[in-house]
Structures are given as structure tokens and as C-alpha cells.
Image 1 (cartoon, rainbow, N blue to C red):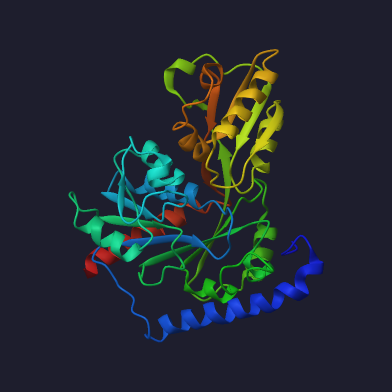
Image 2 (cartoon, rainbow, N blue to C red):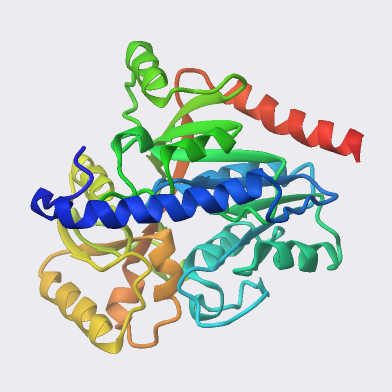
Length: 358
């Protein structure tokens, strides 16, 4: 995959990338050599993140961990809360808005009401606040935190997109990497995400060689499965899931897999796309209403992502017709090549080992 859609710009962007790589490498070395302080905490801390900007599936993988752990532990998750208007530390409640908490934390709180969901750009301060709350969490999951090195997580999980492996990319702005590929050495677990469901063991072996794993690192492969759509505005929409014409409303980094999934299920898709984490304006809502009304010649429905649903719920201008026919399409992580049992063992083994040493 080419790291930039316009190769003619590389001669101008590459020097900036080299400078950016120098700065980020120097910062990482400062942590490695102890020049910058890192803090450990008394509870197990699991960091989920990536080296690249854009969507690698951090939220679905974080949700997988929440689903795995919430039955046995008091779990908390902490993220930056990208796109929120609020500042500092904030606990996310089901009544919160996306403007207050960010769309992804709000999505997680709706799906896991018993989990403590918090946002804070300063992860160290955020963990301290969580540990001073009641009840005290027994496990903390950090979302998008591999570059937040002031916190020394006990287990680092690195995600990389099947179609854009970090070893085949360049540093920003010529490519999409936030730091050099060597940053992957800090991870304990590497997950290749968004793989085709029929990924073969032969191709998995090729990818393993491309990633140049370090001794002790564990590699897994996952794919996304779309589940049954559910009404965004509750029971009032039950029975409205009909027709094969779909207005697909998305504000995510890569909506194409969702469109493909809907088309494979026989839907005639009209895409309506916005930038990732987009804050919907009144004109956007008018455009959404207008587009849906134009499609309403025969039974149809509107489908959006769970992340976008978290923001659309806050909007007051959606038409009554659209609200009744608006559904969210959930996705969940599936492990490939029989890797799930080994992954679960690693997670529980880390928590058990940490607790014994504490």
C-alpha cells in the first residue's frame, strides 16, 4: 500500500517526516533511558493502541476486553475522549453527551453500563482519579494509549490494519505512522485487524515474517463481524427494519467495509459520509433528513455506526420519520486461526501475575 495518495509530494513531505521521526525517537529514548519518568500503578493496566493514525479497530478490541473481563473484575476504561468539548478528567454516564465525553467512550458506556468509563487527555492523572473513586477498579484498560508513555502499562496490545501494516508505512506526514515501526518492540501482543475471514495459515506466516516480531511477542489475527442492527432511538423503531434500500450514514475513518457488508446482504446502499469523529451541524442534519426523505418512495431505512449513533442521539433536528427508521450496525471482534483461547490465557495470566506481585 502506498503511504501517500500523491507521490509527487513525497520530496517535500519526506524531510518533514524525517524530522518528525527524529523527534519522536528522541522522546522514546528519553523514556527508555529514564530521562523522562514513567509511573506504574497498583492495579493491572492494559494499553490498547497503534502506531498509525486512522482506524485500526481500537474501540471494538477494547470492547472485547471489557466483555471478557467485566464478569470477573471491576473494570474501568480510560481514553482521551477525542472530539469532546469538555476538559480534564470526566466520568462518562449514560446520560452524558458526545460533546461532553466523546463518541467512543459514550458508545462504550451505553454498551457496558456497569463498567467505569472515564476520559482524560492526561492518562496518569486519569488513572489516579479512577483509583480514588469508589468502587476502586481492579483492572484498567487504556484506549489509544501506546504513545502515552508517562504511564507504564503492564500489558501493551498493538493493533495494525491488515491492509496497511506498520512495516509498510512511513512517518507522518508522508505516511500514517505516529512513530517509527521500531515502536512495536514495546508491545507484548500484536493483533493484525480487519483480516479477511478466510485468512490462510500460509498468509499469516508471511505477515509474521513481515512484522519482524521480537522474542516473547505474541501475534494474533482478527476480523470484524457485523451483528444484527438495533434501533438507535429504542423500542419505537421495532418493526421498522424492512426494505432493501439503505441510507448509510457514517463519520468514521474507513466506511467502505460497512458499505460492502450491507451490499453483500442485498441492500441498495446510498452512502452519506462525513469525516471521522465529525460533529454534526444543523446543515448536516438537514442534509441527512432531506436525503432520507428523497429515498422514501418505497420502504427503506437508515443505518449508521455505533460511534455515529452516539452523536446522532444528541441531535434535536432529526425528523420523526428518520428516527423511527434509524438503526445502528454493531461490530464485534472474532479471532482467526484458533487464536482466541491463547489470547484469553495471556490476558488472565497477566492479571493474575500482577496481582500476585502486588
